[in-house]
Amino acid sequence: MKIFRNRIIIAIICIIFAAAIAFVLIPSINQNKEATVFIVRAARDIQMGNQIVEEDIVLVEVGAYNMRQDVLTDSSLAIGKFASIHIQEGDAVTTVKISDTRFESLTEEALHEGKQLVTVSLGTVAAGIGGHIHSGDIVSALIFISETDQSGVVTTRVERPGQLQKLMLFDLENAKAKSVGTKSLIGSVVTDDDIPRTATLLVDEEQAKLLIQAEYTGKIHLVYHSKGFSEGEGTP
Image 1 (cartoon, rainbow, N blue to C red):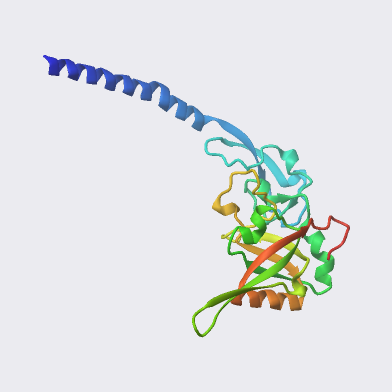
Image 2: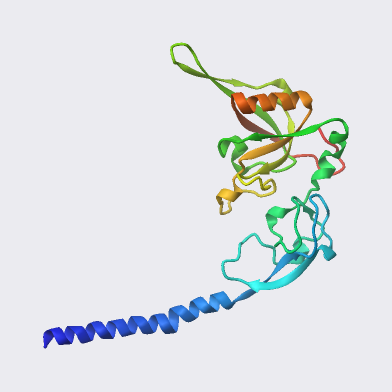
């Protein structure tokens, strides 16, 4: 009799749990999945550096479930900004894909003077100044070189070539070679896709050679100097 009574109690508990799942949990999940939100999408291809106009974007209604936090939901936040990467038609417009600064306008004069772009690896988050730098900022490059002598002792020296001081940072890229140069890591939820793994710098031919040599013989650590030049102020 006692065993029978215990089985009844267990059955009642199971029924209560099943009812809670069926009438509370599942409807709540379905409601979240059915919720919608308007987001900003590219109505046509937008080339990197182009200023975004009203005709470039469209508001579309999509499901809000698992929506990324950096997707724009207000078209006014995109209009007048510049595409920091090439945005394809149909792509959602995110904060990472737009910038207050047109990259080409910052570098156009320097490129005409024979400047070049060179990309170097950032081995650690610290080497990229912990997310405090952005496209257009002015940085210097320190080079860490490790050497092993005949007795097997490893020594490290730091070089700060005068030619690698006050370089313009053109962009930062993640491990997938996607631009993250306009995203601040400070006070935000950071994923692997947000962390800079390479830095692209605006340099002359001699600076390019030094950076490429350092890429293969040592490690590069960036040092922040100042905010980049605003449009019309020229380039370093």
